[in-house]
Image (cartoon, rainbow, N blue to C red; front, side, top):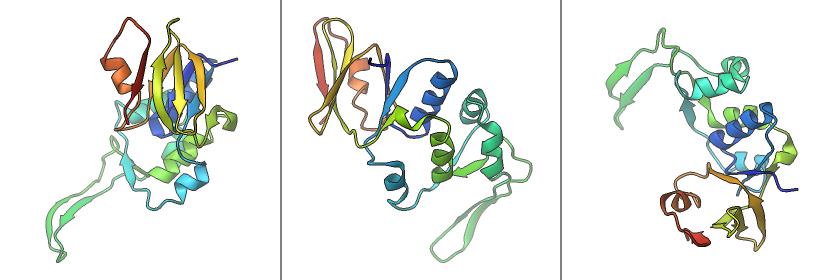
Length: 181
């Protein structure tokens, strides 16, 4: 049976939503273009994210993951802006700043992946297009030629080149296939 909700993208937003749905006993599936979690981690530097009190930290709290986050996050981070010669042009000390702790992307994704059942993520599923069907449900088509249909809700957590965005922006009374190239 097809879950009613498809989440496109297993980044922080997509997995956090999956975790929240899991806690609410709402069925879902996450489709991710990366081949696997380990493949995604091996592609290079991960960078860092700072999570804010009213958004990212609030979502982690609702997902029951705030204590785990606090164990790996960095608080009181100072900021320096320097030129190529190492001259510091700006410096802000992070003392006492608890509203925007930082975490490495890899650490955040590892924590989030551990919070949802592994079978809820379908790796290696790059979305080609999203189609609204005549009955109002939605079909997701993949680059590999496969498709999954029957979704009542599609959540685009697939970044800047989202395949869902135009489905939200343009409403048609007839079935529509949207392909963002």
